[in-house]
Length: 65
Image 1 (cartoon, rainbow, N blue to C red):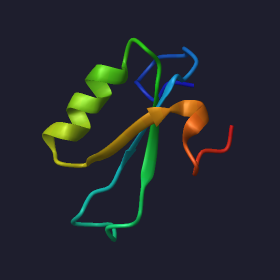
Image 2 (cartoon, one colour):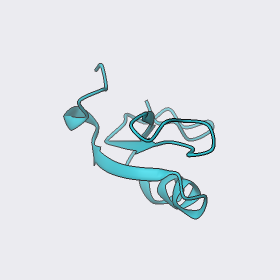
Image 3 (cartoon, rainbow, N blue to C red):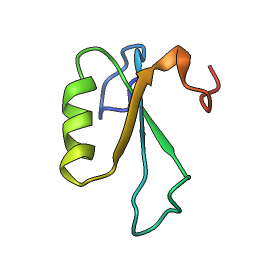
Image 4 (cartoon, rainbow, N blue to C red):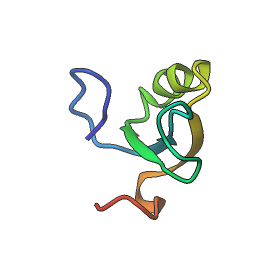
């Protein structure tokens, strides 16, 4: 399910990120995004320098689906 507030759409994308002030470089957290929210969630993380990679939700090696 999409990580955007209030969205109940199925996830299509896995946005993998970390906060370098809190996490080691290899640590990744994952937000899931539907097609509609992929850009806005990515922009939010990217503006803060947190976004590390974007992959199809089914292709994320650390995502249990």
